[in-house]
Image 1 (cartoon, rainbow, N blue to C red):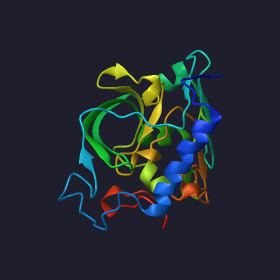
Image 2 (cartoon, one colour):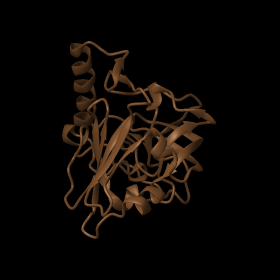
Image 3 (cartoon, rainbow, N blue to C red):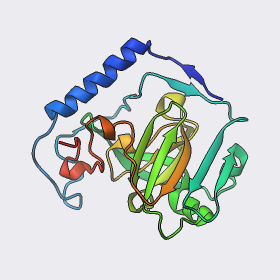
Amino acid sequence: MPNAADDLPEGAREKLIQRKQEWAGQGRLLTGHAADPAAQRLPPGQRLVTSWPVLDLGAQPKIDLQRWRLVVDGLVENPVTLDWDGFNRLPQSELTSDIHCVTAWSRYDNRWRGVRVADLLEHVRPKPEAKFVLLQSFDTYTTNLPLAEFAAHDALLATHWEGEPLTVEHGGPVRVVVPKLYFWKSAKWVKRIQFAAQDQPGFWEVRGYHNHGDPWTEERYSG
């Protein structure tokens, strides 16, 4: 379905991944401090930026909207496979939230448009035993999070940023936005949302990064 754009050579991709794993082993950027998000908007160790840096695994899948599909399955009463038109028939919302990246930059007041996770959950109806979510992307990336975090009131499946369709480099046509966690948990190019009773660590979580990822307690790395 997708055609990869701006792919890194395999050797360069592996070096990028290795470097980020080394950061985890070294505890890079850790300050050892925690903060209360009600009292401090900028999490510990973060710097404020006005740009939006691009971070990925070296491939940016270019997806034909006529062939795009989002699978929502696992422990749900109503598993669905949504095409682009079906996805856009779900209730649309606009939300504003901050981005906090584990590489120590934050960006305030990002204006998003898309489908609130709460509205998607109402559509698919997770079963009582569903406690976790695994997100899968068109570039093979995966990440995991508790259902309670995914269901937060400000979590969104975003199609637009600052009034414009999401660009490929930032995860378009659809990316997840979970503002209360480091942004690696907000998967780009999402293609599958799987609900499960047991947690299943994703790509970075098995490579030294924290399984939860709370910016205000500096949950950058598993160590």
